[in-house]
Figure 1: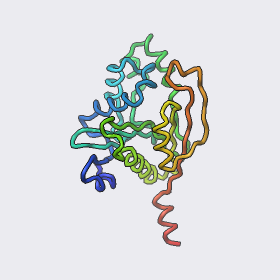
Figure 2 (figure 1 turned 180 degrees about the horizontal axis):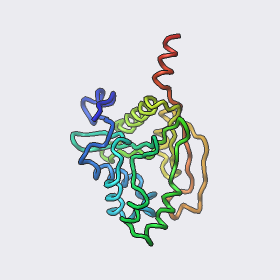
Figure 3 (figure 1 turned 180 degrees about the vertical axis):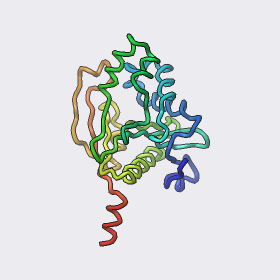
Figure 4 (figure 1 turned 90 degrees about the vertical axis):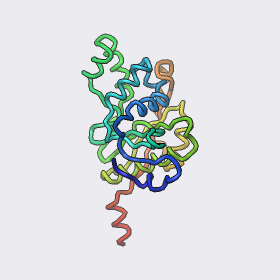
Length: 216
């Protein structure tokens, strides 16, 4: 697993590293469910089944984690090159949930799907363990995601934040994300637990662009 700048600077606390370590899939799934279970439950619930499905279909190289010892206390996923941290195809989904239960759930998942545009990295979630919040872990994860985007030649990071999560939006705004558009879906409030989704963008300076500016 790759050591990052985040790891070098967190000598007395959790370290940030790229990739989901083998054996921690269940921890990452639990964090994701704690953060997004209300939104994911209509598609992946009940919680035990949903956590198991997420853990079984993670793309390990599409995540950044914060580790306290061997325990994952924070995780951020992203979609790049057609793959996201949370994976699993239609066949996997129907195998886990069955045909008649699975098909309506796939329709719900389609409502949550966000595909990146050219030159864009899409974050698909950030979650920090409740006992470790307020320690800057979310900020370190966001910075590392920005580094991933820059190294892959992306010019922008995009994410969606729901109206029921103002804490997350405040974190994103502190890191330079600005609201691009808000899609109001009041009909989904009872189903998914939120009535509006705001898409936020942050520009990325690629290593090549930075070098060119420094040379001028």
